[in-house]
Length: 114
Length: 114
Image (cartoon, rainbow over all chains, first blue to last red; front, top):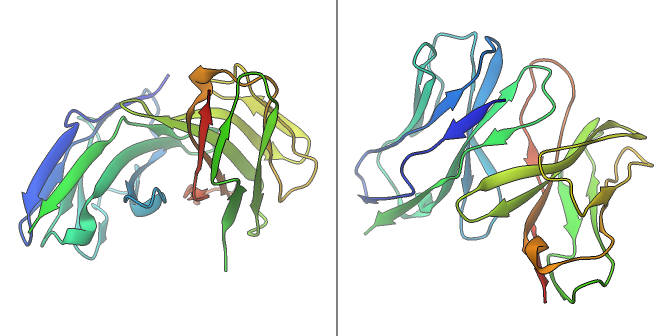
């Protein structure tokens, strides 16, 4: 069974600074998707970024980028120029291609401080 | 607007009183699923459905039922709720095709069982 680990329950960063959230996963599969979802205080789950495991290039979306290390089974999220609106719970998630289930990590609560 | 709609958003009930949380999506997605979110555990899958009349258990199905009579609807039924089912519930959907993967979430339903 796949598992996803986020070793940082809480983090904080000053506005305009850069922060990196860690995620590791365990799988014997070679083809899969990885995701970062953001959950602000409104509780809505919002997709931040997605990475397909067969792509070597790291995904980027504006201020958000990932460092995908397939051999190490690591998928960290970097947030540049942090903004107050980035304050949220962040979940790392894994899904096999043609899979039935997303496996989520326990989450990292990020606070952006003014 | 593409969306997943779940109701009610908030509910307080008592042990043993049957309740249903509705979920509807307007994106013609084949795949729908229910998750519960608990502190420190992330999101865990309760049930999922690959298409009409096709449902299967996720990781934590005990105490829940589902049905998929129409493609757009996937209600979650608690026949006899207990306090350990107090949680935040999310319905989600996605296309079942290859090279997709992104889950679209409803806004969540906060359930309290007294």
